[in-house]
Length: 248
Image 1 (cartoon, rainbow, N blue to C red):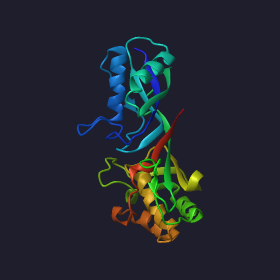
Image 2: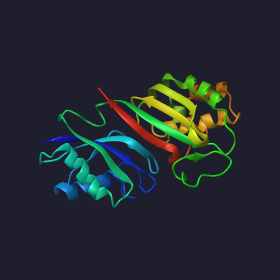
Image 3: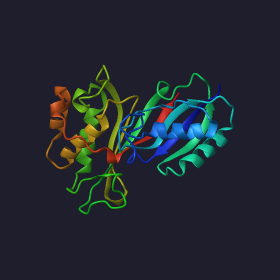
Image 4: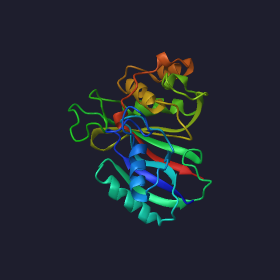
């Protein structure tokens, strides 16, 4: 049975998240419906990451097994024909992969982008796709503080109380805060895996640094406390994007 690797782009605003749930329509379910319409099979799609409600993706990766051996371009184009009416999901690439490939467990690194719109006027076109912060942010101070979080740490401070991970220790390989276009501030984060709400927790705490309300020492103290109550405000899902997943 052929296995296909799909690279998926989506606007997360209309969905309850990536994973199929009872309280709304998910991205996973939306693509599975398109797969059923295309090949007539009730299949299960497996994703590299379970993005929350409102979180977007420009490079989510998933895999699916289909009985018939289709050309990769046919799979991509047929799914997009069914998804076009949906309007918020697109299949960027499809390729056949060995049956040992697993979108989640074969992943070696995940890359995320968090977008902050830092200007006095609120967003209009970008509403739902950025976090609007009107107070001026010191991007260089945010970046210096971000570097203090790199490496292997117990990140219990920066995860959701509902996080199901048994171990809060993670190795953060990249956390850069840089100016973006049009008054945006971009936070780039890379690691093999992240805790639930970890990047949004980073973004909220780094915002306090950028506003001058926290120092680098405050951020490090919060990290070392391993106390969820010491975290800054959790940033909204609007500005978070899963941009790329790396495989060996």
